Length: 257
Image (cartoon, rainbow, N blue to C red; front, side, top):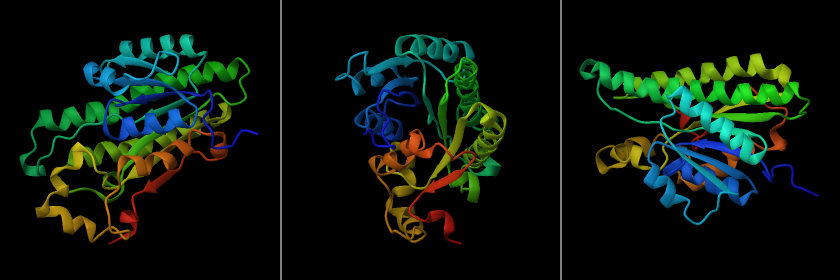
């Protein structure tokens, strides 16, 4: 009997897959039996990260997720290769830190473009594919997980662009869940706290480290590998009756004042 949380034979599209959280998510999904559509703007990193996998397990696509034509081509090509796309993890993101009064318009726009508009572009393209599957008779056309952040629920310091984008992701999640529930498409978001990646390196330095650790009930930052299993759960059949939810995977950070 297949475990309900298995991802066996599911084709999962992961954005920002070449490193950090995206790589950990893709690796865990592969261990759970999935085939991966790995998307990242850094083609060299993508090739290096998945060098040990053939095209039957991982298909690699280098490009910008804000480019609608690129994303549409990825969805069409991967769906043809794998017989459909069963899941999407909208993970790709960037940071451009600055205090509100010092933030330049290009810093604001760059983060909004990738972290919010890019999420929409991928959500839309994969959603169209899943709706077509539903109309063709698929009982379980697919599941989508949008990666948000506690910054989108609590606000953040020195990254108003990031906080605004991640808050917007929560709105995208709820709207898509409402529209696509009739097709049995599940759309949820997960809100991470402080994960040990290159993007959080500055705030994990000694100057800020204890301020954040003191606010995490579990008293530690998480490794990417620690948040991957709970995230991938929402792509599995075990989560078939969960939609429109925002689940914190943050060691309790969101509950502290």
